[in-house]
Length: 348
Image (cartoon, rainbow, N blue to C red; front, side, top):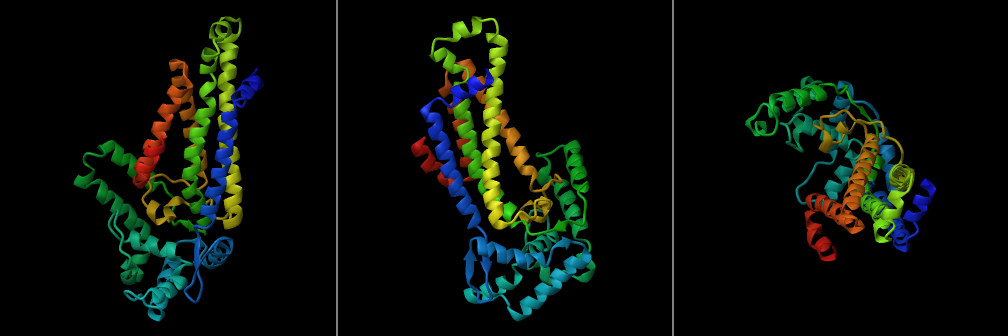
């Protein structure tokens, strides 16, 4: 019965077309993710693609390891040495590219230092120039103090109550330090462009499960289906399981293909690195690694598919649920990418 329900889902031509569109989008996303990595050679010329990612990975492998006091001091010493030989010059694009080419191997650690010795949610590009040997070992302590100071400020009075603030601080304190660093460009690029894939998987999955219940009503077969001996229990259960299997299979197949292609080109290393090593996620309050994101996204899609099936069943129409999910997904896109609002509205 479950196999029969799955066949019904893919029996429509529009369902097969939606899968083709999803695969085409997968190829486009893989291309952008792979070409997202930039490597600057000794002449100051920028390169992108697989070879560039391989060369950049070699540069970063020199700094792989635990970011303790000695490692952070080594980065500071190397940066100051580079800064003396290749100083940043205002308006001199070529000279600045040469500077970047010497720093690119440890640029993420440099930015981590710059932000770690600033106030919460602040960033000073030149802070590393004034970090002393006595200060450098207090990086993680300073990050915690900055977070505590921000949570106790007037800015957060309306955002969190005392229990929530205590919980957030406790979660941040649970993060094991010093952090481990490894080149994670492949994971960072893959997760960045995975947003597009996830949005499309949400829409396609929602569309495919749209007819699980409404089809019985459109075919005028609902009275027969639900009046049979097993229609209300086994039949309904088979439809739900079929929908879950389809959503699960599509998500993990697409994510697996996307991950194998992108990480195969850019490198699988760095999946076990804490996301707090990324400067933009430095004050993220939960101790998770890059690979955890894929699992969390999957459960979000399953929940969305369940909500969609529920709406479709109650409205007896696949379009009712689909439009609800479509507007929900587009709302997320508007929030994250406001410049696309006019283009999406014109086609939706």
